[in-house]
Length: 138
Image (cartoon, rainbow, N blue to C red; front, side, top):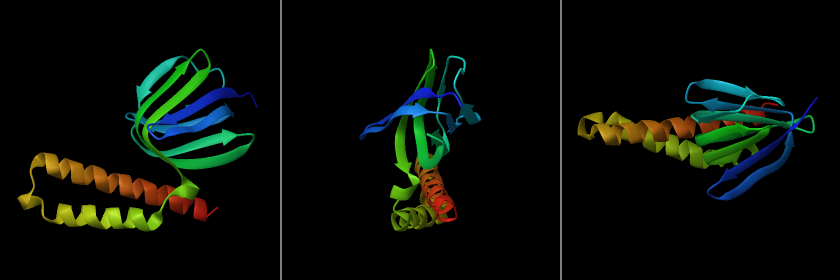
């Protein structure tokens, strides 16, 4: 299978820089798959699982926010948050989920901005838990 150059860079540093055969990420308009020869594009990332196939091996990660660009066959993924599935602290994700749910239980005392922030925290925690649990079942 043909490969392409993939660079994954976050505020914490480079997470991946090498050849890949496939990349699937969640954009703001749904899942998007990238393979060698993809047309040039730039899109905003949503919250979801990223799947990277490199040397025939699949790796998953929680990928949240940021930008994906494909320019002349080079793919750059610049997420706000990117955590490889095997590095996700499930207990921390569960604690974040519980805290967000408690906050949302008290919507009457929250501003609309606080409510949207709590909903985003909950979604991030659920994405992280989902990605972590999907690797434990393989």
